[in-house]
Image 1 (tube, one colour):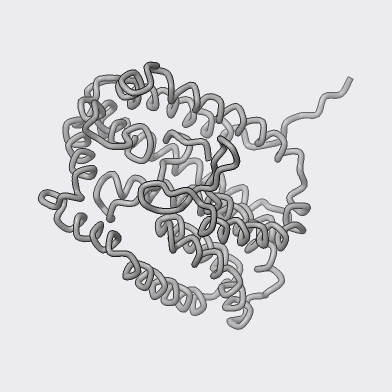
Image 2: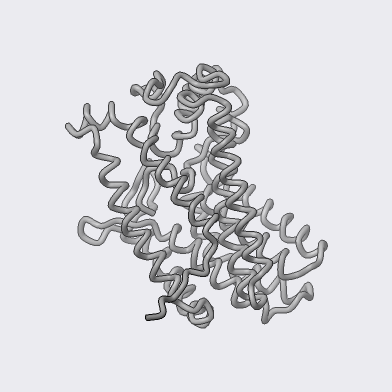
Length: 336
């Protein structure tokens, strides 16, 4: 009996699952104290994460069987659905950390902005080939994606920035021209400046970034930097972080990289960063070997998503940019 051979990228698959397994170890280390204290179960967050890993793995194998051209044909209806969900947030959304970002159906909640990120990758990959590489077509593509990006930015600027970044990279890859890219960068910078002014707390985050040692809103970043500094070159050892003991808010989520630095040191953090860079390199190889332009653009969008989210998370943890809530892919706690 002939068996169908797996023809995927084993190195990419191994790297992804290596990061996921390491993430489970770090989620337990970063959360067991607070989980035992508040939930009565030290494995509370790890158990929930394992469940989502199993769901994600099943979804991955289903997607492997799907011809991506079928996804591209569904791009416009999916984009319309994402716009409806984003609009619904303003009407029936549930607030989290002071902003409406979640929609709950019974006990199940999700963020439409996360759905919009993936849909925009599919949508842009689909229409960029049809738009061509001329300036008019590229600007038209940009205008198409602005409604979704604008609605996301109102309540979640960090996700909006990632969406804009993904769009820039896909459009730049498709256009093969420098001028449209710089025009889009200018337009995107202008929009982000407007959205910064719309909410005073965003300006406060910039002030906290510039005065992290004294600003009241710089507490989380200060604790993160203490963790990084105390880790030194080789770290304190697995499970021996001090700052995770109720000092760093969201230690198992957005700030988990600081716990990695404290327990594994600069060397361990460098290895994790290197694994992400290796994963991005394998994604670029996949994009280069795609059978057509839409397939290459689809892969570039996923690569941009992973790369930008990784870079922004590490930059926030190290206080290289103002604090914003972006999880570390495959490692941070979270179902999305």
